[in-house]
Image 1 (spheres, rainbow, N blue to C red):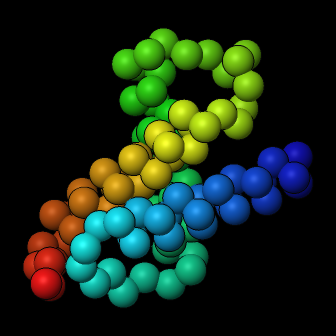
Image 2: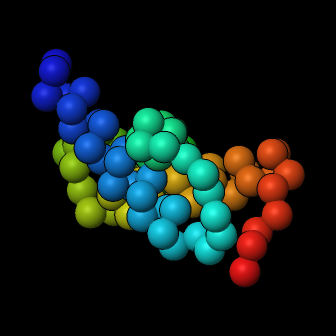
Length: 91
């Protein structure tokens, strides 16, 4: 159970950091907010992947498509966060 939580936190950190790197603009977030961004994005990416492709958890917890889905989900969450907080993207 502890390793599962650590895994989710590390995956959240990687997905959140990559999402912040790939989306241009300034996002003043700490490491905790980046982890939350990645974890929420991972859930969103997994949900969208299940809706689109109909995959099941019995096929394995860690798949390359799941990691990519986590990053895409984190990007979507980051864009929604920016839209809700009415922040302007600096170029």
